[in-house]
Length: 599
Image (cartoon, rainbow, N blue to C red; front, side, top):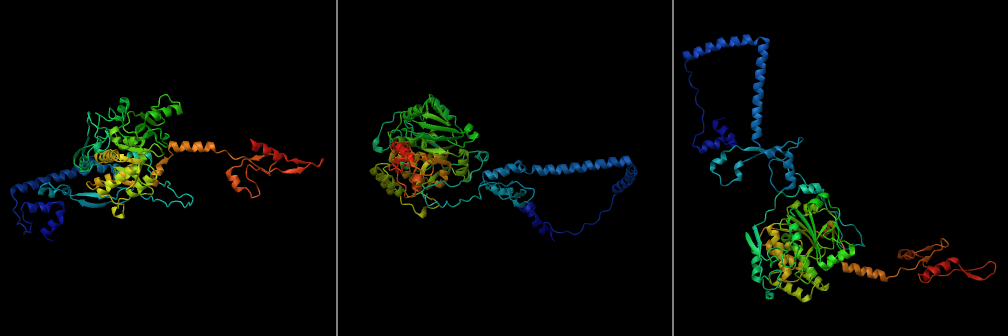
């Protein structure tokens, strides 16, 4: 085997490449060198060695001297081993020595490449060679001569819910409407650990600011409201041109800060407290006394201490809460921190509710995440578990459930008109405007987008520039057109997604129903109470089994009654003949039943 072949085989360590770059030729075999004659100095040196060696062996034969020499040799060997071990430890990064930390990091963010994976003691690691120069394209050619590292690579740790599959819906012919479905959540403690340590990257857009003008003059010709700033169509179109730095209309235009003289005014003390929310905010609103306040359930102690629960109400709703509950101070009702909003920007209570729903990032400028739920909903799962399931697990920054039945905007518009949710002319005008911009019915060609219609009662969001821009522009559409935000959702989403690499997690509606329970609006509840008070309970039915005992005539018992038994209100009277006088008399049970029926 030649020296050249040896050089090629050892090239993975950089020796051959270095020689080639320096212009050196490959080494070749040479004839053996002639033996040089020994000089006098060399002879004297050999004689000295011959004198010293017998002396060493002479003393080494003694027991004490032999033990001393053995101890010195042991110390030398241990020092050599420790030095080698230290060099090997310093060649590995600190993270690689923390196997469990890297194991957790892979579990937290599987998409992040990690080379220092945890090595279990029972599984041999596969070793691969990674060129350390492959991570930089701006280094010089000499960087290719670096020593290559042998790094073990293991598969990432699977998520506890990775093997979870959604079971088929139960076969219940009587229940064909929407229902909740099982959802796999991790424990609260684990969900908290899985919160990303830093904000997600915002594609293209890095700096987002908002229009503000103290002396704003109403200009209804542009559409919208003075609260939204009356943006022109030119401003609207420019807002969809995503750039690194942008300024857009996003409500609260008339004033220096949201909640102070802008419409939707909030007490200064409440605003300062809202600015102290730095982690997760759970928010809801009730305007026009439209809903009953629902208290969250199954909330962990960690969420109670660290998350912010805010309920926005108007003065009408605040008065009802005081009268119905007897509370003098309504700032704290259960878990909710109640904030009274004054000088509402709209006459429509539902449109006022869109302000906190879509602009939470402006009301809570320091919060990282927000979970919005409509006032009619009751949260029954810890918010950190919800965030982990619908945002952190798949690295989403915005999540909303799709409608359980409709997925086409045109069908949604017709359903809104049929239900009288808004005047038909305004809905038709909005749809016509979107059609001129290219709106088409939903089709499979839009996949992987699964729907154009959200069930907008729940919004899960990370507060980063691109998601804040999306909700700002969504609010501008609600301000300009109808308050039915399901109609404008897909237009704003598709315009942004066509310009940046960003997507939305539109999860199934049955999953939403797993962590929120929906109640009826207050007007429907009051109508049911009135109907229940008008319906008189049916009279009891006389039973033939136990004398003198009455059984209430419930609908269930009436359904099971035999055909011979008469309906309530026509209680039959059993008659018998007196044994002594022979005259006919009323049966005691019949008399008792008659008296009870009269009552």
